[in-house]
Amino acid sequence: MKIEITEQKRPVLSEEAKAEIQRVIKQYPEGRQKSAILRVMHIVEEEAGGWLSPDTMDMIAEILSIEPIEVYEVATFYTMFNLQPVGKYVFEVCRTGPCMLVGSDNIITYLENKLNIKVGETTTDGMFTLKTAECLGACGYGPMLQCGEEYHEYLTPEKVDELIEACRRGEIKGNKVV
Ligand code: FES
Image (cartoon, rainbow, N blue to C red; front, side, top):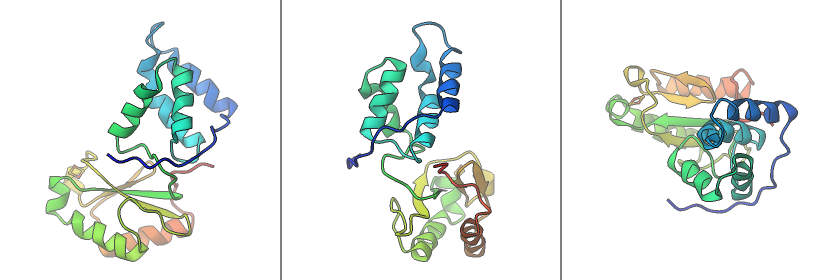
């Protein structure tokens, strides 16, 4: 995987985020704080505007008293983490077999044309990022995509249009909290 480096200052964590990180770390035995890595990465990513820069990942390594490479490994393995700035709404379209069989590739192409971006890109207004993902566990409801914490299933071009409009009206919770 090619990673383009984008600069980003380390986020200043909110008191709530700091407390949640400590609560999660304390769930594991002394010296096993690395086990909290996924949850901590999600918390910090949210605080950082929806993506993780190398500097932010270094910060996570410091929080967990582990090597930075251990954070990079996780961040580059899972598609759920963003390594570049993203839009307010990140559409992750499942492209695994069962969804592909019912037309996920058509939905991806439709979104690319509708948003005028390719997979991996963000619209110029900073609203939408288009990604693909491997199986999201909703194989019986494809084609589907994840946006934030919500699944949108049995997608058709009409449903995609409705989703985009709902996002523009602010009716859908986005991926970014800052
Ligand atoms: S194959 Fe798409 S959710 Fe499982």
